[in-house]
Amino acid sequence: MTAAIPSHKRCLRCQESKRAGAFYRRRNGRLSAWCQECTRDASREASRRRHANAAALERARAVDRARQRRHRWLRRPPKGGEAA
Ligand SMILES: [Zn+2]
Image 1: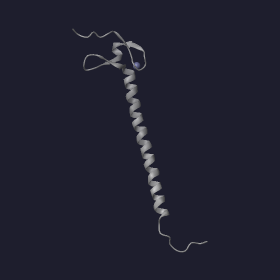
Image 2: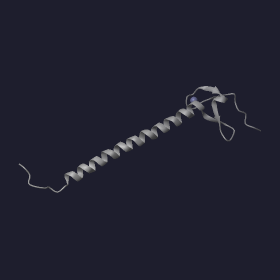
Image 3: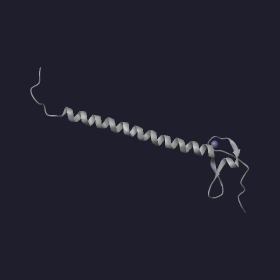
Image 4: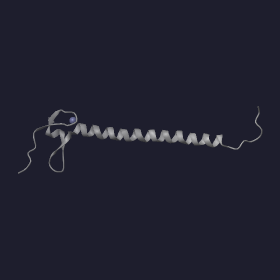
């Protein structure tokens, strides 16, 4: 007995009932739970998040570097007398 592919399916993500053709076919012959649009959407969002994370990480690193520079500067040995 083969699993019948319904002509329409409701996407679990956008809750819209769409044609079976709007869903990706999984390797096991079943239709994916999300429609193609949502699948694309989700992967786009995931990559955007990854990029945003990378940018935030880079910013944090730059702040850290600046802090370390400042730290070294503050700890530098005093040279000459301090003018009061
Ligand atoms: Zn959808």
